[in-house]
Length: 41
Image (cartoon, rainbow, N blue to C red; front, side):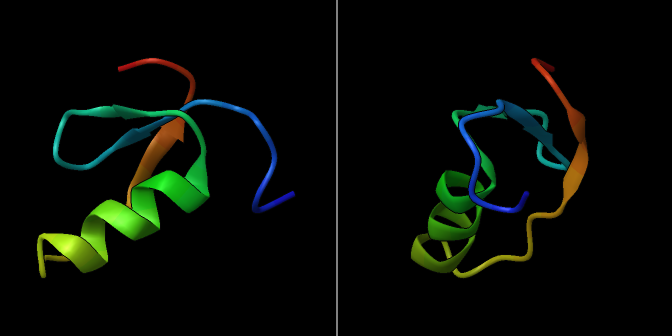
């Protein structure tokens, strides 16, 4: 589920609360951040 409460590790090495938070950060910083894996980095 894309917008669940599961933490994800981004390819920028930062742990995000969920995939939605990662996408928001990606947009705000105007750089591509993908999900490296689920869970903390």
